Length: 87
Image (cartoon, one colour):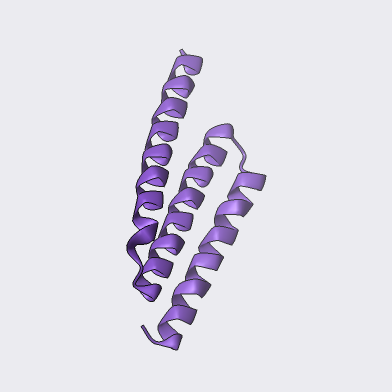
């Protein structure tokens, strides 16, 4: 990866993270905040994966697996809680 590529990827990830944090803080509803938190977790995972690709180090893969399982289970759990609350 070139320095330009790393700079562009880092800029995009920082901008996306800032927008997700803004939605968490200013979200009009609780579900908006929950979705924004899930998106922020995906952005963090993308940053870890980009860092692993840049350094060519595979030691971050178990962290990515744990984060993906955590994100999936938390999203499913909150979705079930939200649907029970609406009924």
